[in-house]
Image (cartoon, rainbow, N blue to C red; front, side):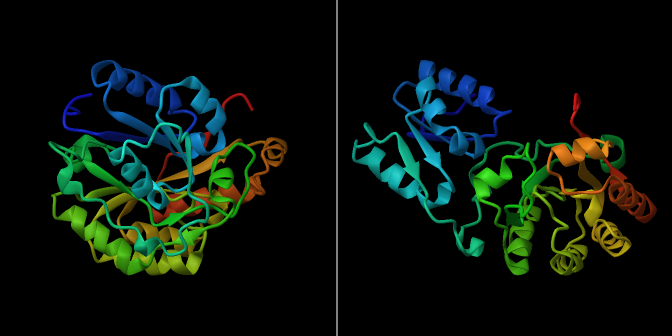
Length: 276
């Protein structure tokens, strides 16, 4: 943790898995820079805001989408009115994701493409950047925070908006991407159109998928567009466990989807839940 000496506010986001790291970072900042205000948002803060507040590590909690309330939070800090405002609730979801400004990555110092997700030998160890093309998932798996965060809705950025962000990142020298949509292949027609555009950009990328949304057309389009690796949430090979988890998926369909992916040339990094 460095270069905080000029900061007035630090905003963090995290899942339940990442929350201990959020707390560790907040305690360090509080010890070394007690004048800095620390805000927390994300899925864990949204779902467990009372518990997070009781931990006493943060000056305020953002519930919902941070873009909707960040200006109010900053203005209250400027006016020295943050005390007494524990929670900032976004309210309605942002309808048009294209209205969210692209992040100004020029503000990040040093080698910001630090996330190496592909084989160093094969791809020269170049850094990668993370993006999302949508928010939300229409499924309601029992273990996933997406439904509680996004309320079962899926909203999409326009293809032009996505391409503009990738081109902005490419200008920094980054050519590898991780697309962190909950399910990139959920809407087949949109996914195929997106792949057509990504193919023109000459990039390498990976993504999260549902294994039953991997027909041969999708898999071939992903590979042709530069996707080298997919991360399907398998969770378990036992149909009883899948049903218990409310996956609404057939184990045989997942197996066939993975076969389609392998035939298309995609590498598979399957996600499993151990102990189920």
